[in-house]
Length: 110
Length: 115
Image (cartoon, rainbow over all chains, first blue to last red; front, side, top):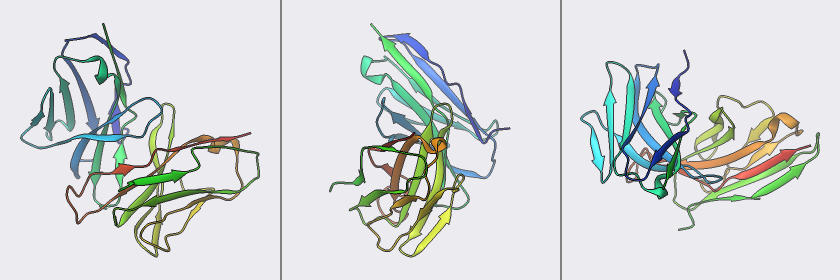
């Protein structure tokens, strides 16, 4: 089983829609979880951390399910500017290394 | 703060040539890393450093060398370029002791083509 698995998409949604992505991980010792956003031909940037109790940042909600070993990202009221690739990232053991998923591509259309 | 800077932005090499990708950060971060990003493969760790004078191998270290003589700089050397090293290279830094300790800051990337 891969360390982390994401549906590559693309997810094509109309403006205003709600869309959700999941990301599964195999290492139960994973400590910290994040969602990064990467625009085309740009570097990844932190979107939000994922906390055990779930957390929101505006239109974005992240959740962690340790029992089933997945994290999720929900985007409400999608905007054209949300079009990007979303990478799930987790930190395990040695603090200097992060593991990245391959990303889920989101395309928001008019 | 300039954050994480990388040079060059683009590079074309011939097979067998060597070169150094430069990376610098001005945030006094202890941890620095090099990744490569290929279609369908995600970001893969090449080498990383937890402080000046300390480096270690990541997932795909073969064909690359690094050194960390200062906190600010973390150059990546390609010893003898191969077409399989055609990729986008990202340098990143973070600090376990500052602010949000797990936030990884990335440079803008170097797009390398090996012919």
